[in-house]
Length: 498
Image 1 (tube, rainbow, N blue to C red):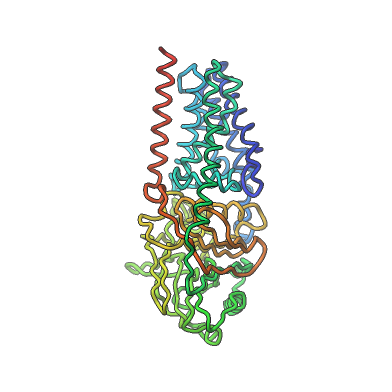
Image 2: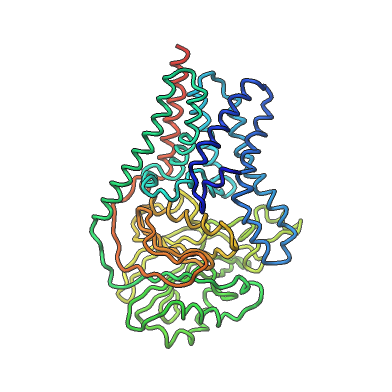
């Protein structure tokens, strides 16, 4: 539970040196005393349960907006942490199976199994890579620069090793073991110094002035619009006022995810009269909408990002691929419906997943921009976002009202910082009931609409860096790090035997 204090919005990463080291020492001691392997699964499960219970409690808040789901709140508070804790139970279970008397190989295996299982947590059953240990360093931008090379999972593996390394001092077989502990301390200092250099290089790079603005909107429109049949007119009027359009300025407006209640992608044009006097041919819109299609007489619904011109004609759109389990679709849908469960959003009709994430090319009315679209939850995934880095910026639209007044919006937002460093691209984040921001390619937040506030921020110039190593090779870098750990485990074991 204390480990949760290392995560946003607290970021007391120092506590991890105590919690991880003590957990590792506890497992070492029990391994020498107890031969019951099932107990070790329980030890890891309990560690994980305390961790997830205290940092994911906000998930239950999403069920409080509709009385039909409130009976599930006690279940989700317990059940979700209980499920995620299984992964941590496997860490300690594999640890007791691993046969070695050498503290260094135990340390390396613990780190490797923990880091690998964290990767599996973020991958299987659609994946939920939320609150990886690496997010403890969210405020240390200089140190985070290394993820442009290692990626988040690679850095996460390093963090687990770093936080566990003080245990070597107490459990070492001999003084030589301290070299490993010293290595990780030196490494984090090296990452910091490299980050300072990386930041300086970026700041000295050439700035490119663009002849239009990208205006990111941060709004605070209540989620009641989903449940109270609120007329979309009032919401549209609020968004227009918040956008402060100027007829003579070239602006691309970015509005949040699913912001217009009860309106599908093609129905927005019915409200064109609200736009006529406020906007001109100098304007384009990126708006979170719902869309529909029909296949063999079956209607499908999508959570979409849609690009409109000033006449509200659809130029391009993207259908969300990575959907939120239970929020936007039901896993094992037929069984879940039998027990009375349904998706929370979209009037209880599950969304379908989009097929491909294409780069949206904006070449209209003297605009020239290539964007990678990401809708809300999709920003949490590392290494799955794009195949080609031939785009200018990532547009991320989100609805964070489901988190309520909790730590959830801060945790969600920080994923954008990690994705910007990995990709080496600007991230332009528009959020309702959350945080809107412009984050540059080294993870620095250049402009921001804080949580609980409304307003807009403009991007007028950009700085371009070379494609990052991670953007080229993705999680292959994590794979190489796994191979390095395996090599070291075998090497230290061999040295011990000799």
